[in-house]
Image (cartoon, rainbow, N blue to C red; front, side):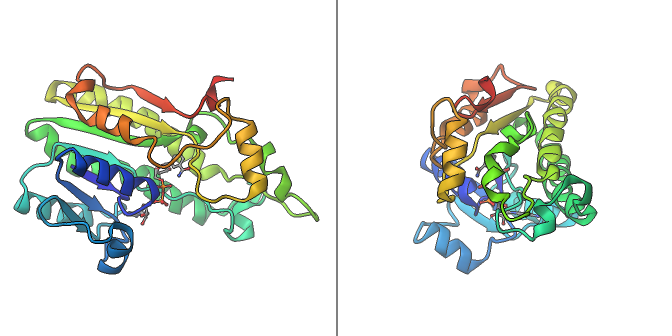
Length: 260
Ligand SMILES: NC(=O)c1ccc[n+]([C@@H]2O[C@H](COP(=O)([O-])OP(=O)(O)OC[C@H]3O[C@@H](n4cnc5c(N)ncnc54)[C@H](O)[C@@H]3O)[C@@H](O)[C@H]2O)c1
């Protein structure tokens, strides 16, 4: 199985829970270097069940090199989890979180390149190999901000002393693009036994500041952010035969954010 962005907060969780169930997992991540992997995965045994490959998902050559390595060690993969993405962290440069009218074109390009084109390229290269072999499962990771607009009111507390703060547009636009890339590929590859689904998440607790947590949690019917292990079950479901009749769908796990 291939997990892009597997060194990150959620990607690490997906890798560990897949390995725990006997899968072999190859990570495509810009940060797949020895030091970072040791920090994130500690003394976990690798080689037999994990490969860390410093792949840039925005570069077709890089993805092809990563896939060649997997093929030579384990053969053809059975699943692809497109999880790598760029978001705009709260401490981004001010123009990133400023008014929409001035949102930098370069930021738009950078986010689109990873979040949408990166998924497109991984589907072409890795998904193409699944389709040419025994088939498999592709999961594209989306966000509630790809389904509905960010609720800019929860960032009100950042707008003091004439400072602007808006959750920027590119992340939302890139994530919503995944929904129809998923549907397109689900129908295109249906005859090749490649199932393609979107998995949409709400926000995950990561020591965000108190004001953000208050605003966010008040907006969630379940009253809290997700724990980072609460999406693992859905990953296992979607890569396994338990979801054998599911393709072209979007599974939403968001504590109820999009329910009202
Ligand atoms: N964390 C959340 O609250 C949340 C909420 C909803 C959706 N999501 C989605 O879940 C996924 C994982 O989020 P996360 O919070 O774990 O992110 P993260 O920032 O912790 O990890 C992302 C990983 O992607 C890697 N990456 C970035 N650009 C890359 C590139 N060009 N090539 C290869 N790897 C690259 C980074 O090195 C990093 O390890 C993302 O798709 C995100 O949009 C996250």
